[in-house]
Image (tube, rainbow, N blue to C red; front, side):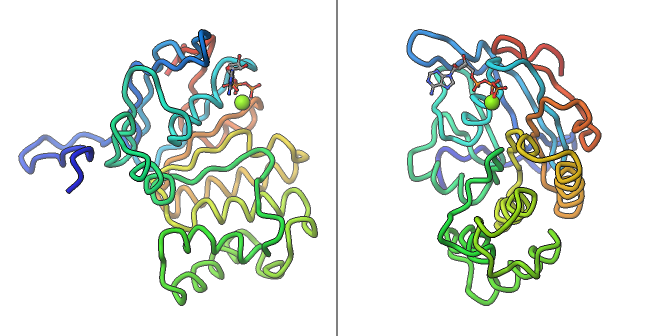
Length: 237
Ligand SMILES: Nc1ncnc2c1ncn2[C@@H]1O[C@H](COP(=O)(O)OP(=O)(O)OP(=O)(O)O)[C@@H](O)[C@H]1O
Ligand SMILES: [Mg+2]
């Protein structure tokens, strides 16, 4: 048993809604410039939360800290059973592969792999058996409406199609949380609308929590809660 994993709830504890994400008093600086000034944020299992705020307020930095890409300077972050502030590099790697799905504005698909292979990679990284992997990729391709594009490489797909592949890749390993940084930012409004519908339905279907960074207030329609960030702090939660 890993010493850095959070303790399980005792059997006799009162049942309260469990937060799958607990961010507490997080500070993060780049050099001498502090970007996050004590961020607190809890997200319940399966909850969809929109994160809004001006450019430079620290939204992407918070997502990078949540994904374990950026270390924090003070405070604590727990996601599922992982306490990130104390985790070793290998635990963080396992955490990123198993626990979270990350979706970027610019898709970040591997250009030499087909849609099928890009999605499959998430399963390979956690040693999912080949047959299960293939079945799951097929199910996801159908869920995102791209079964007919399985063999296409990213540069032979539209922006909306690429983002649908990226979403399928992000949930292939059934993460507890999806971190999405302006996932509709480079799409026209109708493709963006489809992406939002897809994120909502997959979050509901698989009970995956979603933290959605967006500048568009219309995107908050798929979220149960909106939080605002200003100058490195959450100003309403
Ligand atoms: N790797 C880095 N090194 C130094 N400073 C950084 C780095 N990443 C971000 N910053 C700074 O941290 C601040 C917050 O940046 P961040 O990218 O988190 O903002 P944001 O809220 O996501 O903005 P946007 O809406 O434009 O994406 C900015 O002032 C930015 O210049
Ligand atoms: Mg950003």
